[in-house]
Length: 485
Image (cartoon, rainbow, N blue to C red; front, side, top):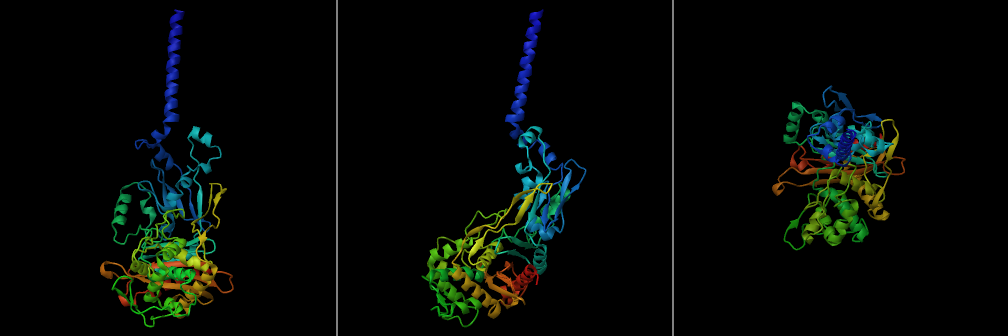
């Protein structure tokens, strides 16, 4: 009898050992595969079972959470949703996360390892920490000024501090309220369909995700290339530029919208945006010189993050001489985001030192303990300081003497460059209006803001559309808010 009991006990121990081994296999070695299984809703229920961490602007939250009492308990809420949508993106129970909500999702949702002082204990207990907070660099007065100035026009504004790279404003219009997508019901699906089918594309972040031909605003890059290469050494010397100008290797003639461009000096050509002069300078600088300068400004960089991904601004690395000439005036395959063009203006304002643009100032845990801070970082020296001084002089001339007079601000020195970019089949579409600029308040040692504005197909007669007419007043409002003038 005792022998049978021992055998039964041994068999039970084997069964217990097998059960323990199987439990270990499932809970330790295969936990990730079970967690990732679409049929497993526990992670989703846990994710929305607590309030999401908040995104802050100037010390105040612009996001929140509401308790729905449903299985997916908490939904995301937004304060001034359309105003800050290009910054926050959305956090949806159905459609996932985008922009800052996406880039900082582990922190905001409570899964970031930085939030766990004892990660091994949390791994065993499967505990989820309270979500952390993201404090942005956005200046609310600048953001509001940009949003208000754009109004009902389609376009975008990017503004930054050229000495630090802090992004002060990111605006894209028309916008939308991210809260419409927060839940998982029928209304969210309806709003999703409506927003995605809208011809105006309100969910497109035009400030960082849309590229445009920069038109004459790109002439800042061409001028930098010509000055750095020594193709131009005197701003007031004649440039040996015919009008009209025949593109190299072709019979195509390029003309100007203004008079006085034949053999014009770089100063006059920059102030009045002479296409023939800049196409000629681009051809003389050559492919390597023009592309190399553009890339030092940040073009062709597919890895830029702020921390959300920024679309790559493009200058073609393989072009015929005629295409190089067209690229020098911001046409051909040259495209740029508004943030990229704000970086161009910022590099000029900061003596050629291009700072890495960033949207996050610091992150904290739920108790306010700082987890990370962002410090100003130089991406590269775009051009030599002597060239920077000449470029600032040229940009100031645009505002004081040329096409950018609508950007002038009393009590500040303003430098700018207008741009009108053709697009559409046969250039039949209304041009995009550009204005890039920087401003320095009277008595301040250095410029405090750099701005890029693009307006799509401005509601005006074609002949009246220009960066100076449509975009410069918007830039002026943004710069005034940034300088608090």
